[in-house]
Image (cartoon, protein in one colour):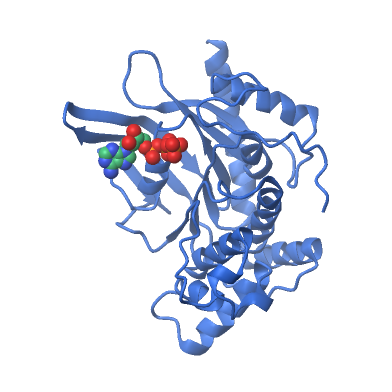
Amino acid sequence: MTAASAIARDASAAGRANAETAAKSSSTAATRTSAADAATAATGTTTAASSSAAAAPVSLRGIGRAFASQSGDRQVLRDIDLEIAAGEIVAILGPSGCGKSTLLRIAGGLDQPTQGEALIDGEAVKPFDPRSAVGFQEPRLLPWRTIADNVALGLPRSTSRAAGREQVARLLDLVGLAEFAGHRPREVSGGMAQRTSLARALARNPAVLLLDEPFGALDALTRLKMQDLLLDVHAAEPATVLLVTHDVDEALQLADRVILLGHEPETPGAVVTQTIVVPGHRPRDRGSAELAELRARLLDGLGIDRHGSARGIETTTTIPHYPY
Ligand SMILES: Nc1ncnc2c1ncn2[C@@H]1O[C@H](COP(=O)(O)OP(=O)(O)OP(=O)(O)O)[C@@H](O)[C@H]1O
């Protein structure tokens, strides 16, 4: 067995253990309530009881995606196998253009694989699957609507007016925007707009939350705050989360597992080149030696040195202690 396959085997065994823990932690309403209590205690904010759908496992089996081009089919993804447990947070890293967003889109039914299948809770993902919600780098808010009305756009159609009002108020409270319900998007900061977008995604009551570089456009400090917020939200409403990021430190701070996509020599299509199980409870000590070692491993896997910033990869651990 090669060193690489030994690491992969260890990672997958530990991943299963983490996955089981994540599944257990989201399997009962009682657990969800105590998670919400924990989040409330941690943030000092009051949140109404969660009405989140139960988190669901995601299976990506033998996923390949080729796009037609003038010079023939271009294979972007190949043989991707990924089992994500209910309530688990998995981060996807990889060089720019390797197919991270494509994989996320396939998981949410926004794109179809040309090989393999994507399942949520054992059932094939449907086009624009209602069991999932997607958050993007740009908040994509409607400028003429208030913050509350933008959040309400995420509500399922069947939601009654009264239940919708209650749900929006609860979500605005959860993301710390209760006081800004009546503001327009132009009247709030970039971080607040992104929080609105997160609340709108949660309004769908998703079992699976798909986040495509959700904090990529934010300044470093706001980004760190948003990472903390995401963890609080996940504790209160523990959906299964698939997160695409360019930020190695963000991945290590947020995820149970980090998946690295990359290319093998002379074979078209990105594959999973590394799976790293991130130890320790969140929030993690950003300055720990353990995370530093994993960070070095991931940067190495991305083909850049630990001080470099190549191929669109960012790091944020230059801030040793963040002041909040
Ligand atoms: N609908 C499409 N038609 C043709 N090619 C596409 C389509 N969608 C994506 N691609 C191509 O697939 C490749 C992977 O794109 P994707 O956006 O998934 O990469 P990524 O890893 O998320 O990139 P980045 O990190 O820069 O956001 C790119 O070369 C892109 O041009």
